[in-house]
Length: 363
Image (cartoon, rainbow, N blue to C red):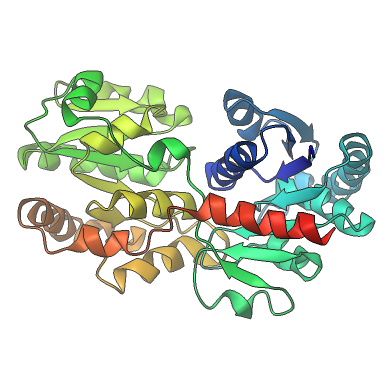
């Protein structure tokens, strides 16, 4: 039997890449299935999803600004018009199951599916549940989560701890260090530090890295610096023989193979990928996210001595000692990377597909 699935979620890579990983697993399980993505117009999913080989429809929906703005006043009109468009897509595509991975982009489609009685599954990446998933969870068949104790957010719904799906190319980093060093034009015999500021980049992490660069290279690090597309023109001047500055990294398998340590935001996708990798990590949570969920994500690991944590408010006082801890962990490992690996759920996408199969059999 040929099934049809709609996946909806977006705005950031943290919502997009888990959806793509689920779609890949669905395609592997049901080779004849039809898959459609639904996201928000002018957001990164409109580029990244087609690059992954899937069709996508964009809705005229935006997120809620934290301060009063004209865009907030237009939000109800855009939301209801997007619900109307979602009903049209449901009529045309006739999905057997809808999968939501969070973010404002998923709200209209999932709401429309709930009104029509179309079964849907939610995937919540963070230790603090997102607004859309909390709102829609009572009608969901199941909510797939990555952290324990999530029943406080989803009291009326079945919860399954599956972990966060990650891109298949990151499941087994088989690239050699020599191959990766050649790709990035770096010395394979010298330490490599990777800076990840999230899919869109981070203004604060970029300015901090510019301040730390001289000290890092003095400690023997080569640096691969993913600064984000909007910041590339500002920071490309820091490129040197031992520093690579890039707006976005396509070959994550190579950069992970080469890196000895990573400094990263602690969005759910990054945490899941780095857990599978199992290398020394310093997390710098973004404070500009709902309910400070990135700090909660990081604390779930740092409390088990599985990673290091640097808050933005402590960048001026704690940076030097924490970077030194990274160096010591590389040279004299204490098991931090192995403890991080214990948090990994490498089969998350397959487990979610098994739950989708249950839903299909129920209907």
